Image 1 (cartoon, rainbow, N blue to C red):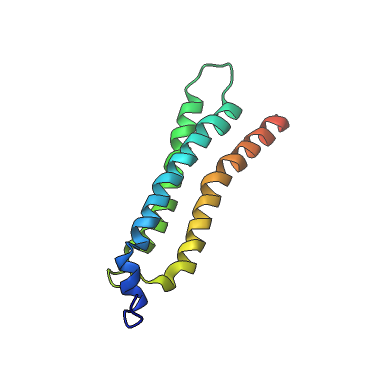
Image 2: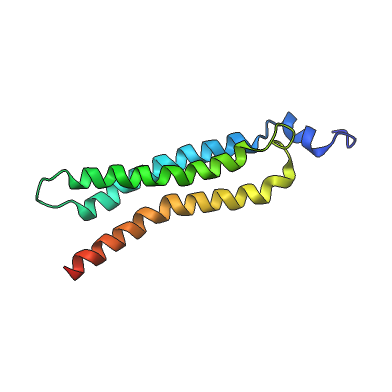
Amino acid sequence: MNKAIPSVQRARAKGLDWRKRMSDNIAYALLVYTALQIFVTMRAIEGDSGSALPLLALVVLVAAIIPLCRRFERRWESIGDARAADPSLRPQYRRDQLSLWLLAIGLPFALTALFKGIAQLS
């Protein structure tokens, strides 16, 4: 490859676009978060009462994560086309990617522990 070609142009030629990558990560993280909420947290708070409260809690918990994910996405959407393939943005992308996935995976387990703790106090 010609060394005279700037790294941004090489990255763009390879299809690197931090905006799209973060958008994809957010979509997958929301799916994982929702699945974990259904299978982990909901099992911890649903009871024998047959009420709609667990379903309402699921809707609230899923809706609460969307603004946080939107904040990540907005940060990456705001970069222009010229910087979208800039390899120097990799550390910031990795930081946001790690934060997003820690939130998506960790929050359902943290909420489950909280609900179980509250149930133990009752």
